[in-house]
Length: 371
Image (cartoon, rainbow, N blue to C red; front, top):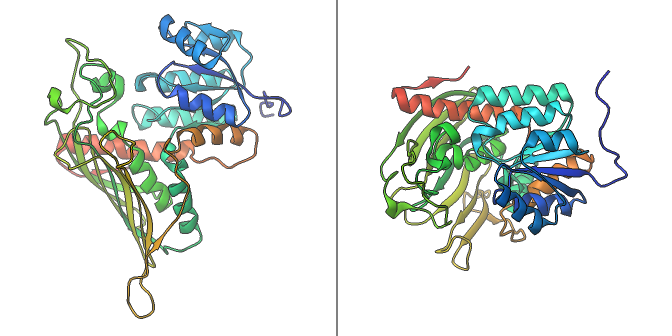
């Protein structure tokens, strides 16, 4: 027999946070918007844990996730930690019978992602990842248009998340491969995921890629988020990457990600070409990231019967949170059986296989076949 549900669907779900990182703002807002209660937080940094508990009015604070899982009656947890700890913490939470919402990337590599997917299936619990760009109004509207058949068969796509000055601190966990798994390829994999989402997540076949370390230790290319540098720390990840993925169904994907590269401005975009229409979802960031100079695009490109362009702008509401709150809300609604999940563990495994192959191809200077 399968495991019984741990939650009483007539009462608010009880959620615990593992980690007091900045993304907790969005997780908590989304959980509460869906009617859940955030009742506990665990973080090995007591000052960070107490500050987050005060901010979010959380009563119970723990030094470790293990203690929180053992002592609290929780329905779900969210994992907001450096990437290295995603897999072990998700596995512990699933073993304890909890539903799990985990920050991106899913794991350090595809093997870990596969272990997590298997554990979620065996536990019969919901496991989702914070691919918040799928939850943006533009992305939802575009996916609905694709599902209606407006684009026909998508043959190719281009995924970009490029920055000019976007290194998130020097020597901390972001720039330490053992803790992060990599640089912008793994940190900014949102657009690769979104392109695959629009394409229907086809099975990847080959990857050819190159990574570049230019500027990775150059303080002129630090991002604006105020993350402190760690004196004597490690900077052993890439600063930029370019790659090409071919799929078993014949479609292809070009990808480009960077923290530090000679670009005019930060761009987050997916463009695709289908047999009946093309499309683009794009944000060109402003001078201060999200400000009045930012530009958003959500368009589809058609030819009319005479051969003239007949393009269409898809109108959606603005979401300056870029889907972060909506993604967390969806997680709770999936548990409550009110919505379908925006992403799945099996998709996460495919994505991490591509990430693994990008790094392997860059190291070997040769195409990598994905098994």
